[in-house]
Amino acid sequence: MTPDLEPLAIDKHTQFLGREIGRLSYGCWRFPGTPQSDIARKIDAAIEIGANLIDTAAVYGRGEAETMLGALIGERPSLRDDIVLVTKGGITPPVPYNSAKAHLVESCDASLERLKCDRIDVFLVHRPDYLTGHAEVADALDTLVKSGKARAVGVSNYTLEQTRALQHFLDVPLVATQPEISALRIDTLFDGTLDHAHAAQLLPMAWSPLAGGSLVTGKDPKGAGDRFNNLISALDRVAAENDATRDCVALAWLMAHPAGIVPIVGTQSPERIRAAAGAFEIKMNRRDWYDILEASLGERMP
Ligand SMILES: NC(=O)c1ccc[n+]([C@@H]2O[C@H](COP(=O)([O-])OP(=O)(O)OC[C@H]3O[C@@H](n4cnc5c(N)ncnc54)[C@H](OP(=O)(O)O)[C@@H]3O)[C@@H](O)[C@H]2O)c1
Image 1 (cartoon, protein in one colour):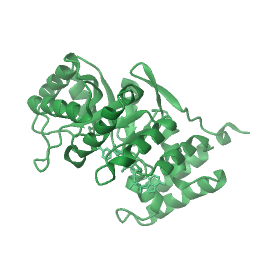
Image 2: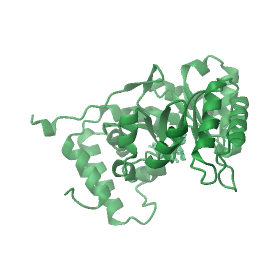
Image 3: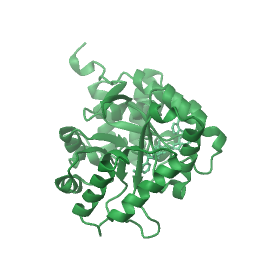
Image 4: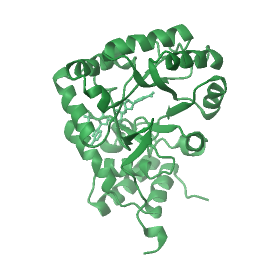
């Protein structure tokens, strides 16, 4: 087999904060509105496929998602050590953002209370707040780490330059970045976000890795037209060759990138969470990977 046709390697695990985590993670954004009695089945399904990093945020359901996860941690305290717990602060609807030091510290305190634990593993600034300087955000994050409320800190929806500016003022290293990344949303491959994450050893977590479900339903989310249809066809071709589903191909495509992208699985179905592990079985070669990229770009690579 020529090297170009060899399957790209996709590791099932990676090292993060001194422990092993799965290359897939699980997110709680869509918990609100679902029964509390289903939460254990979702988290157990995630852990079963190795997705032991669990992502949530203060703003999800205005605290409800954290409360739902916290109820499970309260019932089953051993769960806290089984997971790497990530939450976020700084979105304050309808303001919309506030990353002032007092607000981030209070937000973390409220998250800890809802999550029924005394420490977050990674506290992320949810979105850049254009009215709080990087020095003040850094002071807030350093304070959270020094007080032991957060083991480590990171950013979400930050540009490369915003991430660098924040790091400049921080005593502790940022450990994670969480942008939107999917086969449909590919900006981070080109704008330096993933290159910086790789070089600075930030874990790149991909939110909405199936473009909020549109890569599964095949329904064009934003009128991308031919570009979207061609992307679906490219994903379907690789899926057919692997006897797999399109969503597994879309997750595998992210995980094959050398920055070590960790997609955050968002489905509320325990069966579909388990099925996401099929992504590790996908045999995708360089040509397949670039076919998907070129379909998403709407043009051939130069
Ligand atoms: N940092 C941020 O600003 C930010 C923003 C958004 C999200 N996030 C994080 O990213 C996580 C994932 O986002 P997301 O929920 O938009 O992810 P996604 O995987 O792109 O989309 C999940 C949606 O796809 C649907 N879906 C249908 N069939 C599916 C299948 N076979 N497999 C998987 N999903 C299927 C799900 O519906 P069913 O439930 O019916 O399967 C759900 O509505 C969130 O939980 C949150 O932790 C972060």
